[in-house]
Amino acid sequence: MNLIQIDPKLDKQFTRLKQGWVNCHNCKLHKCRTQVVFGRGQLPADVLFLGEAPGESEDLLGYAFVGKAGKILDKIIYAAFYNEPEYSYFITNTVGCRPTYKGKNETPAEKHIDACKERVVDTILLAQPRLVVCLGKIALSAWKKHLYKYQDKEITIPYIHLRHPAYLLRLGHTQEGTREFDASVNKLNKAIEGLA
Picture: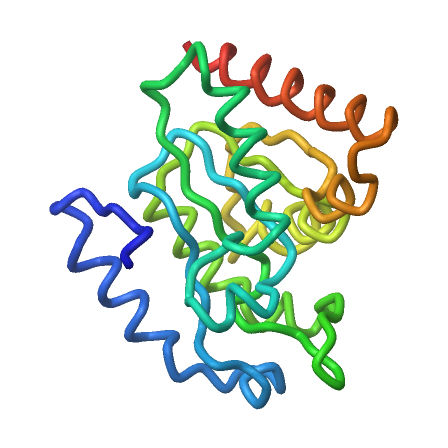
């Protein structure tokens, strides 16, 4: 199963990126990971989705957002891109390793995000997105604190913030859940229409 489609021109760069990070020991998260999760989607990408961290399914399979929250994200993307199918996307996280404590997912600490920022920036530069979509508060905070300005270079890519799909998953099929899902679809759709 390969959930990453790479333009042949970027294949060598992506291979170098993966090789450079596959054995990362920049923080303690390497001790609990099965593998580094780079993302999924197409490279380059018009839209880059930035999540928080891999969960159990992602850690086992090696791709971002392949668990239950990923299915919600896929529905949001499908609904928002319905009228704009020519746009490509790539999904990654602020950290490449699963933060876990006693088998349960944890929120990545600032030090983990900081240790992984070079990987994320390299992924963004490789993807060349025209829009970044921050999924949840952690991703938005990471974008503003760690990624928007990197090595005194400002990454001037427009961005928007959506609720994290795991939040929508917790809301379930309630009226609030439907409202939040529709709001995410509409906000994303409006942002990608602005790319035209």
